Length: 37
Image 1: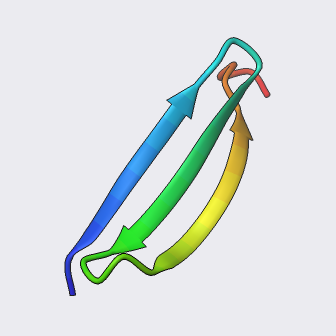
Image 2: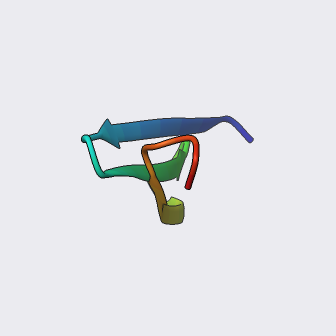
């Protein structure tokens, strides 16, 4: 199965979305953009 990852980066948070080759959302998450966090 092929997976595609999209990142939406801002100063505070990075939104992460993993989508299968068929267009189904596999995983959504958010992480702090600063490495110290």
